[in-house]
Amino acid sequence: MFCCVLYNFIQLYRNENEYDFIGKIVKEVSQKINRTLLHVVDYPVGLESRVLQVISLLDDGSDEVHMVGIHGIGGVGKTTIARAVYNLIADQFEGLCFLDNVRENSIKHGLVHLQETLLSKTVGDSSIKLGSVHEGIPIIKHRFHLKKVLLVIDDVDDLNQLQATVGGTDWFGSASRVIITTRDKHLLTCHGVTSTYEVDGLNKEEALKLLSGTAFKIDKVDPCYMRILNRVVTYASGLPLALMVIGSNLFGKSIEEWESSIDQYERIPNKKIQGVLKVSFDSLEEDEQQIFLDIACCFKGYHLSRIKEILFSHHGFCPQYAIGVLTDKTLIKINEYGCVTMHDLIEDMGKEIVRQESPEEPGNRSRLWCPEDIVQVLEENKVTLI
Image (cartoon, rainbow, N blue to C red; front, side, top):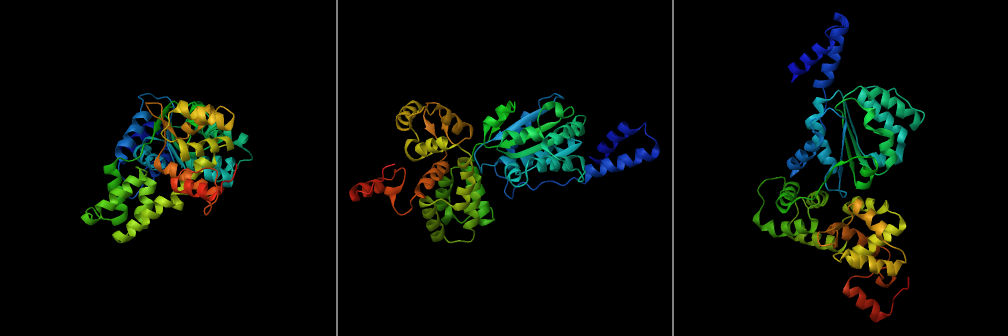
């Protein structure tokens, strides 16, 4: 690789005087060979096939600037895939930046900080200070429009974040690539990103391998654990986050502790998993939240037309727009039969939100779905009218 890089820069700078020639080659080659790889994940289970699919979207055979979006529910592995792709193809670019945790960092530090970080990482100048987002946009365009760059904009949840950092393809030099990860497919559509990849959960074999690696740190697992491992895999429904959290929590634990733990998770979801998934719920408008909770608690598996009919009667407005938002955020899906489905842990997250309205008194909750709770409330006549 070193020889290839050296040859390219000799061709590029061969008309320079000797002093500048050597200086530029030393600088550029140093940047190439000293590039630090990103840590991807401890157990890269099921990663290769997903990475190759994203790379196939990026490599369209042209020198045009190309943007690709990776979307899916929280904890499904979007950032992990983006890191792996970045490591694999970074050597092909002059400028690099993995701008992670955009949602969180924009809340804490603002969009100007995102722009400054982007410029600092890509052009190597940490002294850049911007007065406003509007000042930053022309500077980014000026610095990048002749440069072949690879940018990853990770965990985007607002269109303004994209407009401030990767506004348009004319911002970047020929053959540049931009990867955007988000929970909201609609943001990609709004930004004109047509090449997208939805990350699905792990299959059963992959999930079992990830759980075993996280929980036991060894390849061969005591056969006595297989029944409970399969139970956890079923509970996690292919979500890598859940598998890793549960596996880590139960590292070194007995079978009895595994059983007790999963019993507890089925009653009350793990706080860390719940917190990650709930980010998508918190981003919804109030009406959208109510529609989501209705579906999660009562109507999962119903046909879409029946759900719209029921919700229209209950709420007094057409739920079509809200259902579209929930679909874009991968909180629900419409299957080939027209029925509304959702990931099991997303369903659990919604039910836990309602349970928390009144943990001890089911009659004070906005929705009831558990037969035992319904019978108890009716027998004790403790229904709260909402």
